[in-house]
Image (spheres, rainbow, N blue to C red):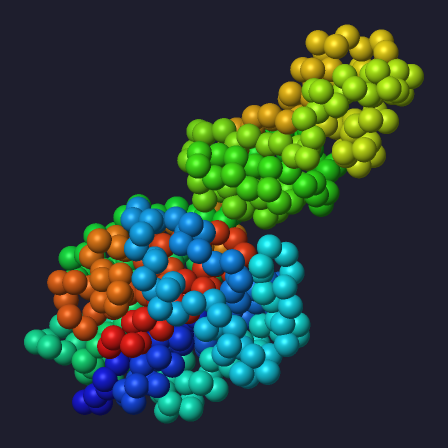
Length: 397
């Protein structure tokens, strides 16, 4: 039977970072990955350029039943630590917006960086390898990798969540948690597009592919970014962000002109430009294609588009402005795990030490990354959680 100090199940961002961290301490490490390639989510992220972290990472950028849990890991291994690693490997990168850092060339650079670090510490990585028959035996753990028995002193679960199920294995980490008697909180798709009603889709089909700078709010989530019209409903950064806070049946409030209080602005324009048509003024905020559709379906004012401002009553202008600044929509559902970037919920953090990521009641058993109930905002935060939680676990195996 082959023995290791550490066995890590999952060769994604968290698993590979954990391997580097444990390996740097001189431990013998085996990483088991069911897929043919390691880091598949890294490779596909950011349009193939990997938004690998965010310069402004703070605990407030994460959702969890215990909002304080992530603080320790994020402070032990910060965004600057990972940026240093990227720089050390001479990977060119740039800031896109809002502190989001992307590779200049390809997300393959990040995967190669992680693999180079792993090989430096003699980490063994087995791909197309299934872990099974996992059990605790005294102070060790026993499992089979492709049917071959293995023992380890520390076992790290880095299997990811339920997002993008084609990457599988679907929910394996949660099954292991329940096998060991650990609580798994309800999960749902997060950072995911909204699906609107069939009627809504027909009304806005012509706008598919169009985007608009907005503020979106649902529950405690409030985000100012772009919104994208799709054939199914709404997407874009602002919508993905707020989807993590939305619950079925709830509304989403959109401000379609976040820089302007439109009710007052319309009244001012009526005074200063009384002969200007309403559609001309709307054209300062919306594209020519958007104006008639928004006027018809959201403002119910398509008959006023060609009316000059002087002929529109003040009360009507105030109502139109208010609707554009406080548009309330009711999504039918989301696109689900198939297109979700991450999973909300997961292993209850109450069972873990925030300082080590180890299960309090089972010495040597660790859970890291997306499988844990810590979910970041869009913009590199979920990768940073993977790096931080993986590093911390590796330092304590």
